[in-house]
Length: 471
Image 1 (cartoon, one colour):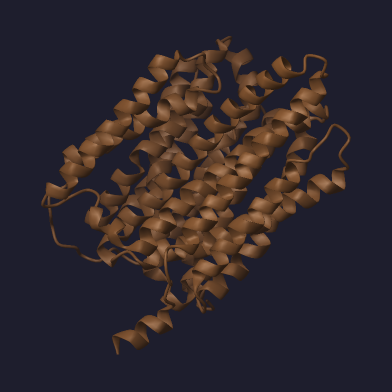
Image 2: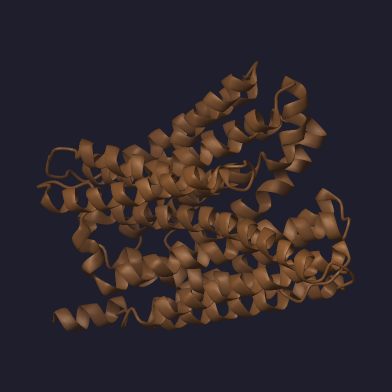
């Protein structure tokens, strides 16, 4: 990947992807400051995060399909503009309701960026360099999601909470200009109707499914309402699939999932993000609550993981261009499971070096998995459906994130309660580490499920093998 134009395209997409991922978590440490500034309730302030995640997650497939019909560059560049405007309005917000509404606007732009970036790279980069190019987006996502709290906490402390939104404006303008200059014009596509009903159905289904998961950790949702919402989401999804099979111009081409590599890789992505976010949810509680570290120091101890991902993702991506990618993604999931297993042994007095080493192992595994798996998904989608495939990949990621947080909180609370009932004499620290140990073991098991999904997807042909077969 030596062509300067190609590098510029990949970097432009990397900027948009990083910003979208960053703003999923950048406000977390600034929420107490925002709460005090607006004198708002905690439940209202939490919607700053929840509204963003729900809108982004629920519209990824829709934006992916729109990009297939009307052009990926058009959707991506529009997403940049909306994201910049939303960020500026967030910083200018005069009350909490305005801030939440502006986060929704920001999320609309982020959804466009998330859902089309991978497709643009897949179309613009020669197939033999696709894995290496996609490693940049893998790095951008990992760094954005993990570095968000650190960047948000630092900026809000030094420059006020508004700065975490204002910083998006100059960076966003730079990214937009790079896209307009370097990303090729959209090719003309056959004009077909947009599947509006399918878009509405999948939006409702994902909203019903993700809303209780997003709120389960912070709200006391009645079990009946929680289960009912999930059940309604599943039923709506079933109806959506039935409708899409009959629709002449479906929003989601169900036949994509008949491709074993595509479907298994998508499932593997869901489970690997679930495992990662079980860890992402638990580690701050361990570092801040049990160890008593500051927010800044806790954030710094997080950094070895994305740094390790940044180092390994380009290597695994480059190798997956030449060899069967399923072995790299499977090995990555296995190594990540090992890192999560190491984290399950954390104690009150665990050496900092051990924590850093465990985070590095986890980051290496994630980086080794993500790029080859993304390349397998995008490489097995027809060109006319790559926007949809990109949206599917992003949707799997966000569902996995939501499931990871929900499962993490539920199992940790359950194991804490069981420890208190079984051995009342245990100290609070012992109860905490007991629950931490078992929940991390579940995370390791989830990573092994991702590994299994990668192994059973069959051989992933390299581009050279595809060309040989076609001849």
